[in-house]
Amino acid sequence: MLWLSVTPSLLPRDALFQGLISAISAATGYLLGVFLSWLVRYLISRDSPWPDPRRTHWLALIAVALAGTPIMLFWFSHSQDEIRDLMGMSHMSWHAYPAIALVSHVVFVFLVLLGWAWADAVRALTRRLRKFAPPRIAAITSALLVATLTVLLLNGVVAKYSMRVMNSSFAALNDETTAESEPTTSPLRSGGPGSLVTWDSIGLQGRVFIGTGPAVADLERFNGTPAKEPIRSYVGLGSEGDPRANAKLAVAEMERSGAFSRKIIAVAGTTGTGWINRSTVDSLEYMYNGDTATVAIQYSYLPSWLSFLVDNERCRRAGQALFEAVSARIRKIPEGQRPKLVVFGESLGTSGAEAPFGTIPDIAARTDGAFFAGPIVNNPVWKATLRDRDKGSPERLPMFENGDLVRFVANRHDIAAAEKRPWPSISRILFLQHASDPVVWWDPGTILRKPDWLREKRGPDVHPGIRWIPLITFLQISADMVASDKVPDGHGHNYSSEIPYAWQAILQVPGWTDGKSARLGPELARY
Image (tube, rainbow, N blue to C red; front, top):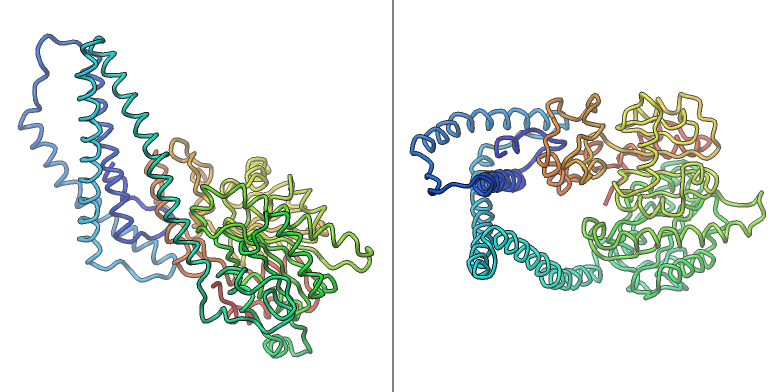
């Protein structure tokens, strides 16, 4: 299993994460070997003790390891360089290999010692239980008791105090400020003059969202015509309301700033920390020359990976509450005077953005467009669409009901192809998902099941040598997720330059061209 851990995955791996994957894989292989050895001895009765492995057996094992490991390391180096070439990244330096060896050995020894300690506890308890029960029953009972105690200890003590420490740390981070989050002086922004929410209450990411974006001068310089100042509304956790109360407050904030008189209103799904991709909002504001209003609420201050585990239901409740509140207010406006209503989200934000809807037709019926970038595994609508895709279409870029309502794309070439095909729906829905994005393709099911996207032709930025290996593939993709936004734009979980092309495919803004999208690219920033 150690050798299998160096096979290619979706993204380049650095020394730390390759060392961790190799250590966990080797420890898992060791565990399986020990378990199978124990099982054989347990099932086969012998009068005499089992003999120790002969010296020749150990020598043969060492010889195989010495012969095979250099071959696998050479393959690892070659495949990692090829993945880097696909993404326009520099090759791995030579000093990464000693670092991989060091990390993998240290972590492997730690895991094995942990396993030995667990086994010693089982053996000690077994010796005591043998006074009251047959040996085999005593052994099974001991293993179950120690396993139960371990789970209770992890859930009741380790998890509890770890969450307490992390909550305290991330709450403090939420109160910090950056150079880009100076208090706003605009009455059209939350936290500004006349706002219903205070600057301190909207959190770090809320302050960044409010404090950035194109100014009127930027819009006029780009478009060459008089522009409006974009409206941005944001309600943070500091408002201390539940999702419904915060959604109601967000709508009141929109009323105050005149958001419902704008040409288009965008309801944003935020990630765990409250983050919104600046490129997504900025693109809309450039395309509509500032005649926009964007609204979002914060539901957590935990990072996305942790929020995904413990706050996902809160994310969905917040997304549903905000959309329902905004939609209800828009319906009070006479039909011919209503602004366009769109929803969008990225990463965990897609979970909140799609939460108000049960199906693709439901999204199309209740919005004027929807844009989801880098969707995640527990999005019911996205998962159902992949599952029910048209026969013969790949999971990586599925076709659903002939693409009448929704299209899936991975890059600007796919977007152009999607626009060329007839798209009869007035409300268009677009999923942007890179073939190399581990956040999109991470799924615990890959531990034991080969996913469809690995049965199909690989995407343009995915190494052709990637293969499904039980458990190993899941570990690799999990490690890939950590650095998924550290790769160049257009790969992994890094979405930026494709965004204006995606919005144009959805909204068909009059006067906007691919040339403008290309010119806008350098103006955009993800963070």
